[in-house]
Amino acid sequence: MSDTGRQSFTDKAGAALKPDSEKSYLEQGSDMLKGKADSAASSGQPQSQKSYGQEIGDAVSGNSNENQSSLADKAKDALGMQK
Image (tube, rainbow, N blue to C red; front, side, top):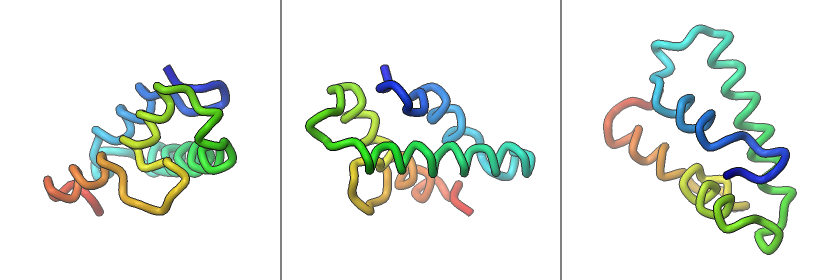
């Protein structure tokens, strides 16, 4: 379960699994804004205050207060799904 004020894990997974080529411009823009807001919330929340589930979710999505590729992005790169 995601922490209060953070994007749910199911929303993140749904956005990550659907290729951008199948999304409307509105969906792409919405995903980008939600991702940026969630990333900002992650960076503003100290690691020590995150729930265990949120720490795992942030590690998978790349929102671990560090500039690094997420596991989801690495998988997309490997499958050739990135833009």
